[in-house]
Structures are given as structure tokens and as C-alpha cells.
Length: 286
Image 1 (cartoon, helix red, strand yellow):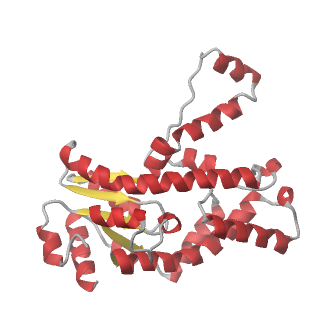
Image 2 (tube, rainbow, N blue to C red; image 1 turned 180 degrees about the horizontal axis):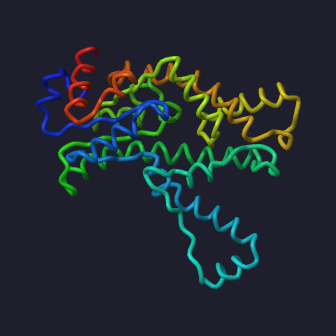
Image 3 (cartoon, one colour; image 1 turned 30 degrees about the vertical axis):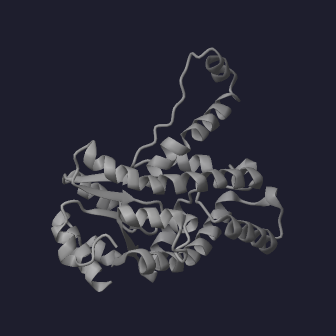
């Protein structure tokens, strides 16, 4: 690891971490807090995915929909209007909307083959954006003058990396540039995330083998074909299945590549000093 003791972490002139874990456990909260207090550069992997690597796909999808409207179609063809994605750190909806949900088109679904194509695009983009953490850790210091760097990774990093492979390109690069920190939730947190997702289901990324197996299982359980799938019902069901499969993968990342902090510990953090103390404790526990 970059830091071999709590004292070494505290003494480091340039602190670099990568926060790992499920959405809703505090990754973005910590990143934004540290950025707001100064001295920390906030790198969002999801933002990088949605701008650098998936931006053209997202905008092309907007244009495809606009071309269905005769009024907008004429304006697009004459270059009279400009369509762009207004993705931000806080609003990743353009990326989620592009990934979509498989199922009945009358309910907002897309064909499973198209869904699978977009999932594959996301995988390529997430691997590249995660690896870019190393580049931006250097840019933060040499270009922008920040002493410290925090990478806010995507919740699906455990889907694109193999924590048991010592040569995994994502984790080997990330661990050379940062200290990976897993924010571990409890069963109560998992139930809370499931409820939040059920109230407002959103597109997700799945490992392809897992996704195709769960898609076939869902069709069999519900005795339906692709056009009979309620997109929101599938991703609600799939999210619960996905959470359980991700937990041991997160744990392996922390065990083999970094350290672990508890979600309850993260919720108690109020400033950069609290954060530094917690990371030092986590390194000592490791």
C-alpha cells in the first residue's frame, strides 16, 4: 500500500485515496466535503465515464430521439440547434438514461440486445475512467496545485475488476496511485438501499455473465418473453440480486488491495481532520 502506518499517512505531504463501495454509503459526500474544505481534488469516475468515454453515445441517443420529432428533425439537419448532455458530479441522469432498462418498449424499455451493447460500452468506459485516476492524481498536483486527491469510484468497480488477480489492470493501477478504501455497510444499510432503489429504480451496470443469467432466470420465473418484461420490475429484482453478489467482491478488494472503514464511521465525519484520523485508524486495523 502507499501508506504503511497511520503515522505515515498523517505525515504524507500528498494524500491520495480511492473510495469504493455501493452508492449511498458516503463516497460522494466525503469527496464533496473534502473538496469544499480545500486542499483536495475530487475526481469522479462516473463523471469521467459520462463525459470523456460515453459522452458521444449519450448525445447521439438524444439526437436519435429528437429526430423522431419533425420540428426538431429539421432544426438538427440545418444545424440550427445544438444538443448536449448537461451531466454534472451531482446529476448523472444522462448516463443512467442512456444505459436504459430492458423490456417492454411501451413502458420505457429497450431490446435486451441493445441493452447488452450499452452495458459493454460502459464496461470499457469504466475500466478506462478508473485507470485515469492515476493520471488525474498527478494532474491534481502538477496542474491544479492540490496537495491531496480523492477518487470517487463507480459503485460497479467490483464488476469490472478481479480482486483475486494480482495483475488486474484496474486495481493494480489504482493501488499504485491511491489507497483504496472500502466503505462497508451493514444489513440495515443494504435494506435501506434496496428500499431507496425500489422507490426510484434507475439503470445499473452488471457483469455480462451475471446479467445474462439473471435475465434468463427472470423470464423463466415470470413465464414471459422480452416484450412482456416490465423494465422497472426487472431492475428492482435485479438490484437485490446484484447487491448480494457485489458484497464479497468489495470485501476482496479491501482485503487484497486496500483498507476498510464502516459506513457508520463515515457518517460521523465532519471535516478533513476527522477523515484523516479515520484513514489512519483503518490503516492500523489493516
